[in-house]
Length: 154
Image 1 (cartoon, rainbow, N blue to C red):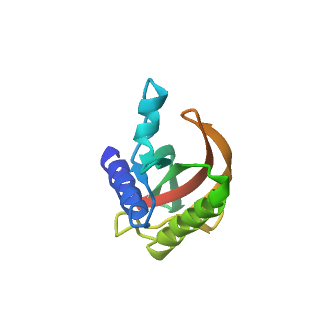
Image 2 (image 1 turned 90 degrees about the horizontal axis):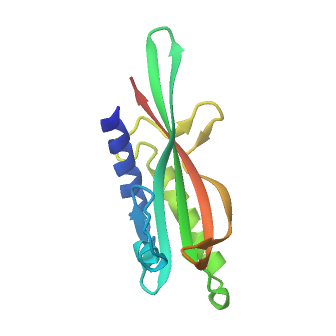
């Protein structure tokens, strides 16, 4: 199971990194004891612009007797420093949409997963669950929460 999780996580990160101007992408939620060190982990150029990927659920399903599939639920969080004069909210929305486009363009994430179709809801690809201002590492930022389901045979 751990190999599948690592494979899927790496494919998610690789897909995210195909988006121009995406900033820092971490395969796990990064932390630091001091705010300055924490900011540096998510810094891109002179601003915060970073993302992390976390597994939040794993499920097994069966469509028919003897056919089992695994589902991994992922949460992706993104942060970008607010610059009101530069309309940074619109730039952040553009990045979110570019990420969603990248996942839609390759449903198998380079062959690493069977699908990104959420069987219970028929949602496919990367979903925007929440977006709004947040304090992150002591800086006012745009923040978003995205979700993704990856499927694999058992």
